[in-house]
Every structure is written in structure tokens, then in C-alpha cells.
Image 1 (cartoon, helix red, strand yellow):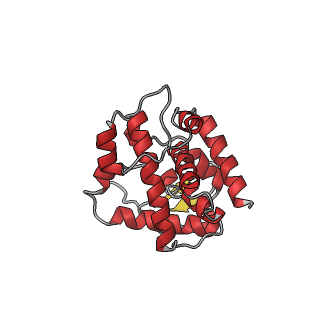
Image 2 (cartoon, rainbow, N blue to C red; image 1 turned 60 degrees about the horizontal axis):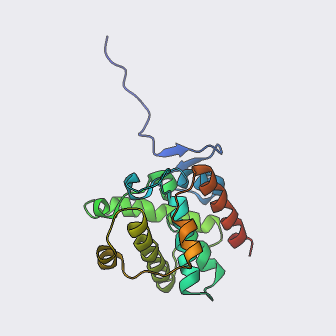
Length: 203
């Protein structure tokens, strides 16, 4: 008996808990739901899970920290830019969080998939598919500030090493820093991400 050949092409979509099926190679904004993003990001670990605390430090909590850093650095920043900061790592709800050193050794295919997903997410929530360079740089600066805080508070980096790799301490208020850098449960991260999204998206 010969093995029967499969007539199906390689699957490039993922089924979400909402019931949506998202094509990773040709993502449609119509297949993107914020509840799926929040659920996924709350369960993806930053730093490959190499952080201290009773829970993982999730990408959802990281994006909330990035938005908080942006508010600290630029109090008058447009609220749509803050929404873009909150969503800057949203593609990771389907492709996971890959640490920067590993991204550096991959080909451009990963970045291409990530870029297409982010463009579709932006369109779904009323943002330009491609942000202006100035906005992108503002988000990257806030992202580096968040990475500095995570590195020194959770991932075992010295302040000198973190400063060399990520730049300066964004100097958040002590209470904000203490809250955002204490790893939350997945349920709390998901809830707070959704609440912040609703506040920014509705404005």
C-alpha cells in the first residue's frame, strides 16, 4: 500500500479563540480582534522567560510599560501615537516574542511577516498602515526606556550594561515603576491591556 499524498497546501493561518482565522502571510484587518491580541500577548513571555518574579513578564505588560514611558517622556504626545505604542508589539500575539539577538541572525522574512501583521493591525484600529518615521522613532525611544527598566529590575542586567545596550533610565515615578515592573498574572495583564486599549481607542 502506498502512502496517500496530501492535496492540502501548507497551512499559514492560525485559528483564534474568537473563531477568526488569521492568515500570517496575507493578514486581513477583518480577521483581527483586540480580544485575541490581549489574550495572546498576556501569555507571551518577554526575555524568553528569563525574568525574576512569580509570573512571566508578558508582552502585554511590556506594551503598557512602553506607553507609560512615552507619556512620561512626551506628556503632550497625540493619543493616537500612544495607541500605536500600545500596539507596537501586537504581531507577537501570533508569532511570539523573539529576542533581539536571535532576530539579528535571521533573514528578512521574519521582519516582513511582522511588518505585514502590524500594518493590518494598524488598519483594523484606525491607524496608518505605516507610521511616520518621527512617530516610529518616538515609540522606539519609549521601547528602549522600557527595556532598560526591565533589564535592570527583572532580567539581571547591571545599570551600566543596560545603559550601554538600551540607553538611559526613563525615570518613571516610583509608584508607577514598582507596579509596572512587578510581573502580573496573565489574567491581570490581559484585563489591563484591554482597558488601556479601550481608553485610547475611544478618545
